Image 1 (spheres, rainbow, N blue to C red):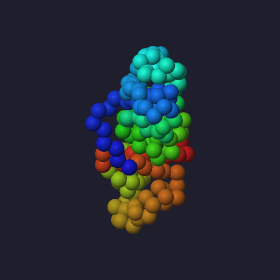
Image 2 (image 1 turned 45 degrees about the vertical axis):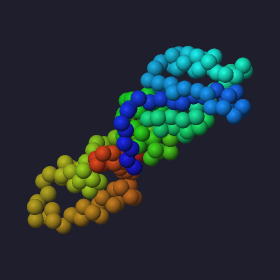
Image 3 (image 1 turned 135 degrees about the vertical axis):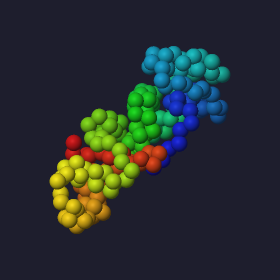
Length: 175
């Protein structure tokens, strides 16, 4: 799960439904970093500029740098996802993907379940073990099976990881 981001401005392509229903695409990209009142104003301007006389309704047809369900996403949801992305960056997008676009769960994961980053799951396991048991005699340390411990913690336990830009970000779902 890696996402490459070049221009990090979250936006939505909002289109006029009257135009769409008459076989024409008319709309504009709207910057989701604005206040909601400014977004609503931009939508009203777009609808007023529509070639259709009865332009009253709109649809979110696409988003950029916002992980949302896509066509049909309400503008408030797109804005909330944009705010989450602004706060948490690419890791936020990957957390949303991992948690099936559940913003509430993603916020909970970032705010209360995030344990940090490591080079790998096993590196995290080894560091956590060392932090907890720093007085393990060296003659016993070689008997510790970190590969199995990692598998147990991450496959059968409460830990999960999300990799962004080669770094493994660790979360504990029981925190």
